[in-house]
Length: 259
Image (cartoon, rainbow, N blue to C red; front, top):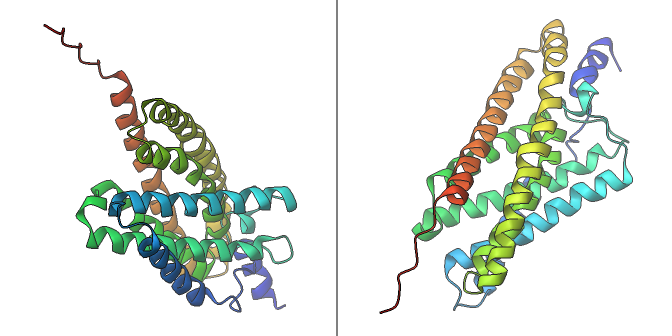
């Protein structure tokens, strides 16, 4: 390893590996998710089908992050393992597989939104585009790649949200999943996600300083882009929190007396 390579390793790490078949995994993920969509019963609307597949994606993502925490050491304070791409031999090298699967899912879901108006919302479109840009750039140049992987655990709140919609005609289950969604959204997206992003932003000054010293303006540019996209995801979470609070605090309409 040359001095230049060692300097880049200090802030970029040495994963994702170019040997990982990223585009193959992304393509297969798109195909498999689309196949599942068409295999689901035709009596389900496109929106309900999207909830089922979204739940499968969420379970796989959360399971991947939990499995990583259970089997590997995590160091969110090490620059190249949170703001960079990770370090080979620490388990960081397997993150790319989950990220590429997620890229395929979000691509499939974005296409679904374009084909079916019932599935499309402005906030969801914005969320998917932001995630696709951030995840793809991170998988290619490694910047913030581990951060993206850890943020996959935010998908936990998606599961009760989808179940709430799927059981909308079962009042008790609908209410239970509604409360579970509000709690999981607060814990996963507002607290956990903000902590992960906080570590990434905390490592940013050292990352930019080392990249400037190495004359690596490409990493500086992509680092600024990743920081901006990360902030946008936090803004979206705050927006959704406001919507949730409005729904909770909205006064219920008085029941009409039967004549």
